[in-house]
Image (cartoon, rainbow, N blue to C red):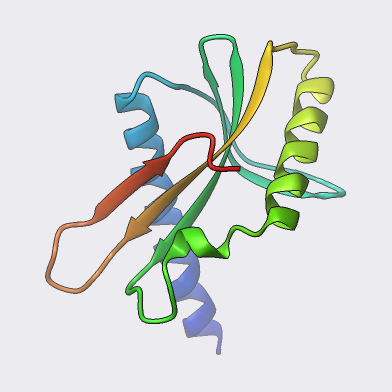
Length: 122
């Protein structure tokens, strides 16, 4: 079981690195990664103009069980929004808006990684 966890962790870490590159390519400034507090974790915290962007990264090897973006429920989006407010408060930062984005990374065998950014999805 430890090998399975290690494999999933490695896939997730790789997906997050690809997501960071994509967000930076799109002009977002990455402020933090894997920020944790008592209420949960934010994969990527970024800034885009006057917006604070809380980004959830979903890495999958297939869409067999549905797309990765479908894993973001209204409850998950609301929690990410609250976490973004906590991050801003803890870092004494203010922004005009807070946005929740999703980046999906599909790492299918024998194909290039497919990275898709969904801004303001939630």
